[in-house]
Amino acid sequence: MPTKDKYFEEYSALATLPLRDVVVYPHMVLPLFVGRPKSIAALEAAMANDDPVFLLAQLDPNTEDPKAEDLHQTGTVAQVLQVLKLPDGTVKVLVEGIRRARALTVDETGGLFLSHVEAIDENSDKDNPEIEALRRTLLTQFEQYAKLNKKIPAEVISTISSIDDNSRLADTIAAHLQLKLEQRQYVLETAGIVDRLEFRVSGLNG
Image (cartoon, rainbow, N blue to C red):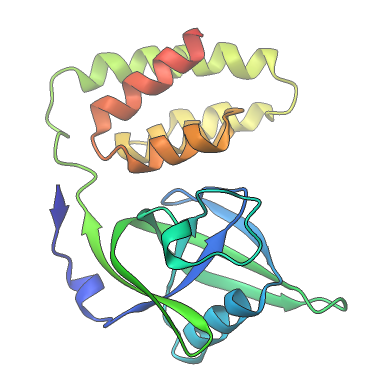
């Protein structure tokens, strides 16, 4: 269920970046390449005020000039860590996901998207007695998966095993799995920890 959050109440609206082929989770740090005018304008607006940005995946990654109705409603509020302007005019930006949020409105104004958002409670079921058993199963299955997948560095296993926050654990494992874009969006839209842990266990079994 959505929840109020003082962090969100500080902002009347967040500059919004439509993402073509990636879904960003909370606590995830990754580079994005920004080239479309609306996205660059949104990035510049956020940086001017040292505000976070709101990252929303497109419904269809092939849409070149998306409108508000072409974007998912659930996305991730993210902090801009680093910006590098490239010679070809695109911008490489390093972002870190902060938390899930849902767009109440997405407006196109002044050449960029602005979203009024509400926080999503990611820990409403943190006291569910099923969580610990699901956590152990997931860690065991991910370790087996990582050993078979040469693209996952060995140190990732020990790093993931040390994550105490189960919500973060589920998202971090999802980020390392080879999932389709719609599956990644499904994980982002799934607020409950148990549901996300169960989805990952099911996915690794499959």
